[in-house]
Image 1: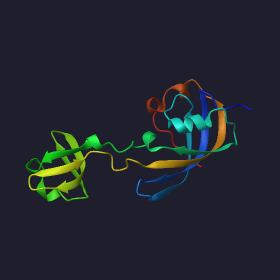
Image 2 (image 1 turned 90 degrees about the vertical axis):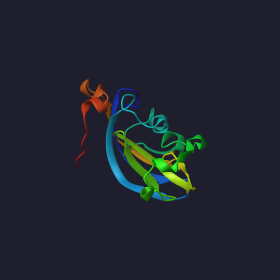
Image 3 (image 1 turned 120 degrees about the vertical axis):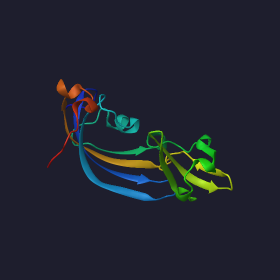
Image 4 (image 1 turned 45 degrees about the horizontal axis):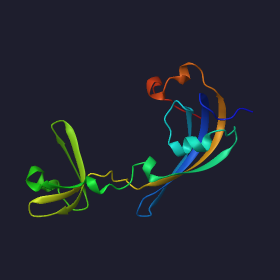
Length: 160
């Protein structure tokens, strides 16, 4: 029976449970995905857990915050001149979004002072971890066409 190794096409069924740094739990319903192991990008923890597994195997994988949205970085909290931003969009604890010179400026407003905004540029999901429950449904050698990264192949639609 073949084992998961580089250049194998995997079909997996998986569910994901995420946990925010505040303890909030979110669960996604089971989904099916196909990818070429070692070619299509996966979370390192997921790849490591799948290596050498066989069709029918089930794995539970913890994916740490570092692999998802990162860990909180204090250096991404900055003071900005309040006058440079639209006052009606500024509210403590809310995301500020504005297009400036064809670029999206986005940050969490931590604090408003008379002439300064304390802005947090960390991703709002920073610190989130995940648990994957994966069942390997199919495993075979990938075809030459499948060896191109999925971003070069276009979207893969799974229908059942």
